[in-house]
Structure formats: C-alpha cells, structure tokens
Image (cartoon, rainbow, N blue to C red; front, side, top):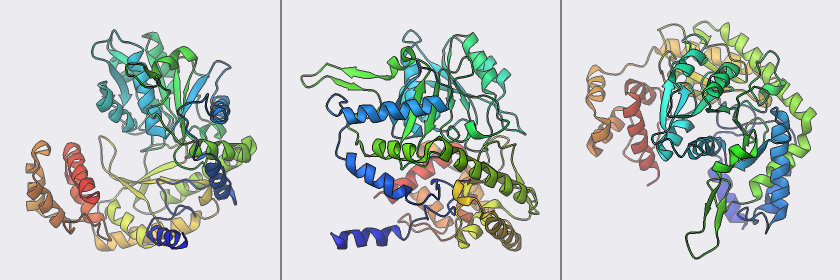
Length: 464
C-alpha cells in the first residue's frame, strides 16, 4: 500500500501546483488551513454511497437539499427555488439546455441564443442535444453581450437565452436584466451562467443584479469547486421553481429492471463529492465566504492596476469579478512567449486565442491564495514581457502558414497531422515541448474548425 501511494506521489510531482496561487487556471485555492483535510475526510465517509436512489441513502438527500438551499439563498432564490447538484459547470449547463428543449416538445428545430462569449459548454450542449446555437456579437470594447442583438435573434424556435455572470474569457458580467426581459417578453427561458462568479459576485460592490432577483431569470448554474473552494467536481443547477426543473429529469420504465429515474446526466454517482462540498460549505460559512471573496476581489484589483502599468500589456474589457484577460498592446512580442516565460518562473497563465474582437491574450483566474503575493506575480510578469521582447514575436515560416491554410478540417490525414507536429517541434508520441509559443502560434494561425480538429487528433495521440 505504501509503495502504491509513493508511486502516485511521484506521478503528481510532475503536475502544475494546485495550491499557492501560481496556477492561474483550472484550480481554486482558498489558502485556508485544514480545508483539504476536512473535505477529504468527508469524501471518504460517503464515497461508497450511491446517489442513484435517495430513498436508499437518505443522508445524501439531506446533504443535497442543504447544498441547494445554501446556493439558492446566496443567489436570490425564494422558498420555491429548487435545484440539483451536478458533477461540474458543464453538466449544469448541459442540463439547463436539455430542460429548456424538453419543455417545448412542439418546437421541431429548437435553438438557443447566446453571446459569442458564452462558455463552450453551451456549444457542447448544442452538439449533444440537437439544439441549434445562435451566437450573437458582443460589444467589441467591453465584451459584454448586446441586449438588442440578443432580442433580435430570438424567434419562434428559441427555447433558451443565455447570459454570463461573468464570462470566462474576459470576466465581465452581461446585462442580465435586459437579456432576461427580452427572453421573458417572448416566453423564453433565460439561463444565467454564474458557474465561476456565483460565489463571488454577491459579495462584490457595484455589480448589477444577475440572480433570481432579476425578473425573467429562470435558471442559474454555480460551481462549488470554484469559488466555494470545494473539491472537484461539484456544481449546482438552480431553477426558479419546480415546474421549470421537471423537464430536466429523466425516467425510463421501458425495460425489465428497476425504473431508471435521474435528476442529472449521471445514474450512479458517488456521495463523496457531495459530502465534501457540504462539509466545506458548513465549515466556511457565510462570513468566511464573504472574506474569501473580499481577498480574491481585492487581489484582482491590485493585479489589474499593476498589469496596466506594465509597458506593453493591457487588460481587456472592464472585468468585474476575479478573472483577467491580458493582451499585448505592441507588436514587438507575443503573449504566447510571455506565457512560456511565466512558466519558467513557476507561474501558469492560460493562453487564449484571438476570436472576433478579442485578440490573443493570457487568462488569469485570481483566488484568495493570491492575496498578499501580487507583487511577486507582477515582478515576474514584467520580467517575462522583457524576455519576450528580447526574443521577438514567434515567426511561422510562410510555407507552414500556407500549408495550414490549405488543410481541410474534415479531411485531415495522419500524414498532415504528423507534418504539423514536426513543424511544432513535437514528436509523434504527443509529448509537449517545454516551450509552447511555437505550438500556440501554429494553432493561432489555424481556423477555429481546424484548431478543433488538430486538438482532437492531439488528444487522441495522448490517450493511446
């Protein structure tokens, strides 16, 4: 047993750090001592319990009702607000879409209207559930959704309208009141994706209402494994009342076994994540979350001000939460090299490719763990920009650009994929190079459709 755990620890040593605030994507660190141990102990107590049947394991029923009630209270819910605990934000968004679709069985070709900044989970839902996504442009400066464009896109096929609070890419909150009003006037559901902001924005100053206090908001998703600092993966999908939730449920008696009845996409699900989330929420409490949100928001403010003073960098939009998108405002370096330089200094910042009015940029998710360590990050960021200027922009050979431009995403061959791997300095085994700027520059030169196909091929090479 000891040898197995030692091997696991050795494997984990090669991962990005999940604590200390140096990984500014994917993970959320409260920096509260003992919280991990509490969550692990609670997880172990319920890990063998099956959430498939709440009548067999009533402890999980109690835990889930408690968690949903806590989320509803935070997000303007009433006594009639209901919900379900899911495995993560993507599942919450998927369920919001399928619930909207199945509530309108008479719509032959359902669609949903969403800002082009909405999370990709909604495009995944469109792909899975046959709901046509209708993206609408956002303001090219603020990156907020345009309520007039949203309203104009709603038609008789629309079953759902989406708003973000905030959007992942830029950290801005869409004008939820105007969007919800436009949806309500057409009798259409309005979902607010508050997966990343739902546990922070209620404690922020100056943020316009975005929750169930806004007329017309019918559902909200909020992740517990983000700013509620619970272990992966727990999220909550809330509905304003039970009639809206009913079409989310799935039941089937069309076989000789037990009648399958599921509130989420999963059937069997371990009680471990739910128990861990329940324990963390109980332990931290309202005052604790208020303080954690204050730290993260203040740290974001300090970092934003400091980044604006770094020659060559600018923050995109007007972020209101704890997310920053940092772009270059000069052409003598590129942000992909800055990301490599930051990694060399033991920071991970997430590259984001250009899309619409949004240029290539670096994403920073700021957590409570960054509080008090802002200057170290800013100093390393400044040094990384200087190193990137010294290196100059990544240059892709014209013949490689021409090759990329000639590729058909629907007909990509293994030989063409191998050629691109070689151009990126990667072997045929899908092993990443130490520095990713060249790889990212190649991906940036590809169309979104080609980039999707290339990354699917790459993922397949990794999981061989």
